[in-house]
Amino acid sequence: MGIKRFFDFFKPPRFWRIYVNSLLAVFVGVVALLFYISNAASYMSDAPETCINCHLMAPHYATWQHSSHREWTNCNDCHVPHDNIFSHYYFKAQDGLGHATVFTLRNEPQVIQIKEAGIRVVQENCIRCHSDLNEHVNLTEVTREKNLHGEGKLCWDCHREVPHGRVKGSSSTPDAQVPLLGSPVPEWLRKLRTRRQNPQNR
Image 1 (cartoon, helix red, strand yellow):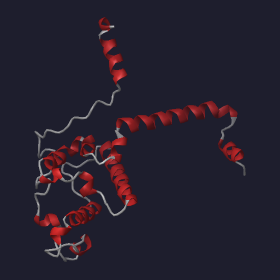
Image 2 (cartoon, rainbow, N blue to C red):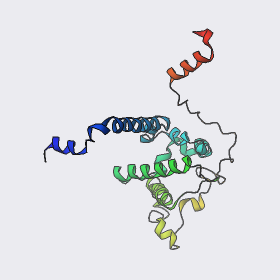
Image 3 (cartoon, helix red, strand yellow):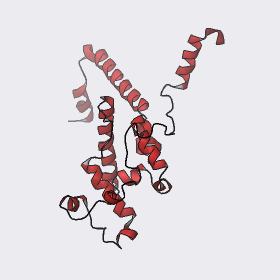
Image 4 (cartoon, one colour):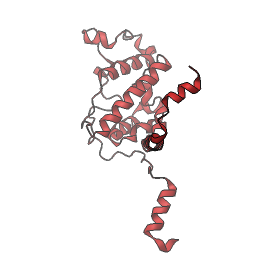
C-alpha cells in the first residue's frame, strides 16, 4: 500500500470532512490550551518552582527552601530516579499524570503521603548522594525491599526532619513565602478586557 493510499484510507467521506475537520480543530485547540494553562513545558525542567504549579505543594517547597538541602538539591534530585534517562522521564511522566488527575478531580488529601514507588526512589537517591558517608556505617546496601523484611532502616527513619520537617500538610506552613504563579491569561487578552471595562482608556 502506497503512502497516498494509506492516508486516503483515513480520509472521511467528502460530506463529513467539514465536521471532522472542525472537531479536530476544537480538539487540538483544547489540548493546546490545557498545555498552556497547566504550564506543561515547565515539567521538563528541574526547577523547584515547577512543583508549586500546584499550590498544595507550597509547604513542601517552603520547608525545602529553609533546609540545608536547598544549597545542593532540587526536587528531582531526591524524588526522581537517576539510574538512566528513560526511567527518569518515565517516572516524571507517570507521577505528573497521577498528580494532574488527582488535582483536577479535587481528590487531593490534606496531608500528602509518599507512595511506595516514591519511597524506593528517595531511598536510592539518599544513598547515591551520601555514599561517601554511608559506606562508613554500612548503609549503602539498605534498599526498600530489605527494609520491608526488617533488614535495615530507611534514611528518614532516623533523619525525620530532613528536609521537609515532621509536620507536612496544606496547613502546616500557612505563612510560607513561595513564588507566586503568573496569570495564565495572555497579556493581549488582559489588555482587551481592561479596555472593555474602562472604555475611556482607549
